[in-house]
Image 1 (cartoon, helix red, strand yellow):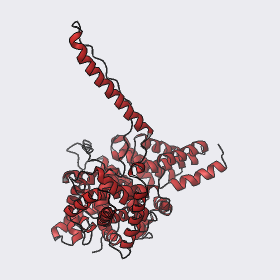
Image 2 (spheres, rainbow over the protein chains, first blue to last red; image 1 turned 90 degrees about the horizontal axis):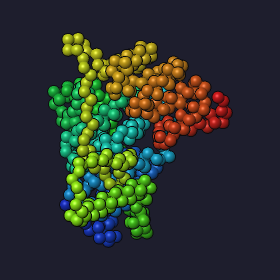
Image 3 (cartoon, each protein chain N blue to C red; image 1 turned 90 degrees about the vertical axis):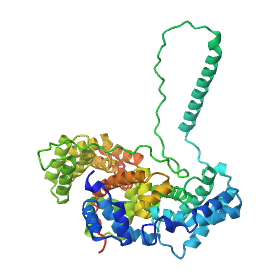
Image 4 (tube, each protein chain N blue to C red; image 1 turned 30 degrees about the horizontal axis):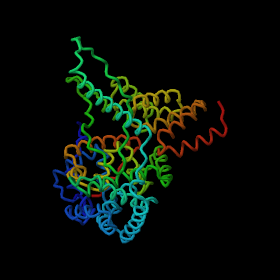
Length: 202
Length: 295
């Protein structure tokens, strides 16, 4: 866990063994078992969706609902060999990225980005924190999907490199490579949008 | 790799935990001065954390979503929830099955016939392998997390520079210089620098990106013909800011009063990037241009 209250650990209170047991019960299609499983993974899904889409996104609840269904139905093909919470988080990230991509609620944000492109208002401080995070979310969405997923986990959700490796079932070096390539692509987009990041307060 | 590409993830983690020693802080500060992404990551972490922190209404939100999801799952059997596969996929699968079937049949028949039919020895004839049509690979659906990348893109070798000519002129340094000039509002020198980069280091990612930057500056200088050429170069090279280049291209065509081409360009932008940040502008321009077309 990287952040004080963030990262992968904050996503769910259930330990992996308990989560696996709940998932196996849910495979039996018993509604109560499914409910228990979904409630156990709900924090991870909510966190991932909120991270990708932003807390005020109008489609957030619908997307969380879709993720519950995706995760439950995805169990049939899950091999119980990796990290279930990571698997669920990735489902949620990809679903949320798709929702954000097609959402009509992005119109206001699109306008903001157009303005940024024209005048780079971020540099003059007229755009606030909210807009800044929205811009970052949108720019991350535009890099290659596998890199976007890794960047979301790292930059937005606060996973450590090791946590991402566990969640995505790849080596730490692969995660580092994805981060490096993703950040390289993101830097070009930030440069294009004349991004002047605020420095962390001392 | 340059300093900006060696992202000190461990130092960032320690800084976020408030557990960074002075030496580590100095190293991190040097990196942050050169890397806007890591600087943004560090600066925005508290904001993201506040957004993601548990809220009182979360439980109610989960329950509402869960109830709705349960209703949907119980009301619709899983099989009907599966997305229809794209038609090309069905055709491709059918083709694969046919090819496999024919190959297997040929192998079986061949084995059966071989002992019975004495084929005179003949030099083997090599047939060129039939090429299957190549289709673009689609992104895996959300339900299935994409498999790990077997091979990450290899880093491009740095352009050769003469060892005894410090300071070395590299694609990166030219790009940085152009970028600095651009930010300082010195459009002319910036364009000249980008052009030098394009000539000196063709094929590098910096040169590719510089086409879009130069195009934007030329557009602002009301030199649409030159801007158009720059945007076209960027698009032809499959540049990283294709959306921006397409928008710039369309704007240049408008400035050149090539209305029909501009309409086609805006439409192309919408077709290729329906969720683009420039979609709103594209639609607005299309509305205006199609309302009063003039060639």
